[in-house]
Length: 446
Ligand SMILES: [Zn+2]
Ligand SMILES: [Zn+2]
Image (cartoon, rainbow, N blue to C red):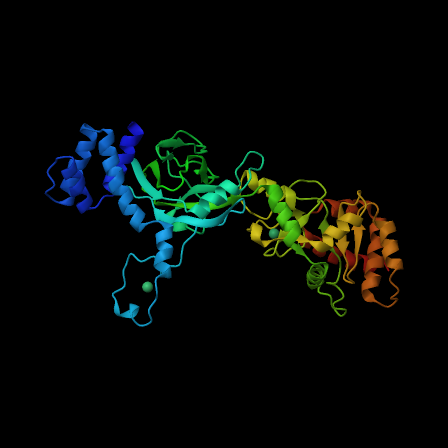
């Protein structure tokens, strides 16, 4: 009953003058006065004499308006209305028309991908002077949306197609992570909908900690009629927006499969990047050294299976795709563990060249080095023999690069300590600098 009263109060707040008058006269009350008087009278009525008929009268008024103004089906009718050329320009522009505004979305969530927007982001309106607030949204599902939910088979006990509610800061729509307001609560069609929240302390006015995951409304949805969602929260001066989406939920295993299917960077493209890094230019003697890449994932500290990085990353070093996706499934940050810049799911690519190397390289090999002739070799204790093998396949005698490699090998076999130091290094470019020094040292050996 308390939740119904709260919901009814929220609905009354959003009624227009004509609707308030109609409500008051239905209930046998005075319907004269300004909007604030009408509102006050209706609120008093609610608080003093709340009964089911009053609730359904309010609900009817509220639903009638929202079913002719806000739903998506109506919006698409607006779009498909004949756009008679020349006529529209003569009409004054209607400020409420959503047609000309580009539709705004909250940020893309790889684990919860939007199929359709049911209610586009709209501000949560704080109407009360106290901190406790309530705002309502109403929408109905189309037959097509309903059948998409019903017809998608459950996977591991989870319905993959869901209706979700998302909340974020109004100023960060499309830019930042979702954020629930303090003491958030959600009522769907009168039922208390569970919201996963964590608070770092019980301080008043504290917002729930990240991540604030989309709230699954699906179990409470009704077909072929309006669904009413009441959001309760405490107002501490921040502005939030809510939206409802039809989504498909993916697991980290699903995303890994997608990446393996569509996100593999070709061997040629990877080789070209290596070449650019090594400045493959026969005249550039010093810089054309090796480029070292660890086969151990910097996150998992284990040998990688699916080496990947973001297209936006400037380094060749990879991290393990499966581990990275699992980590972001637990807590999304989408930050590259190598360069600490954003590495969004859409920009991830599996390194085709390194994948092949991982399949061929001995299990004991922890690190490899790309060479400026386009080949690679293992770095580490086994390095000397594999290097000799690699070199035997090259027959240039006067190639300065080759001489460098030979010198490098000699130098390595001379100094165990330096080799150890090499193995523990993780950042690729640091090696290049170290090697420059080594080259000059080894030249002095000659
Ligand atoms: Zn128009
Ligand atoms: Zn990076």
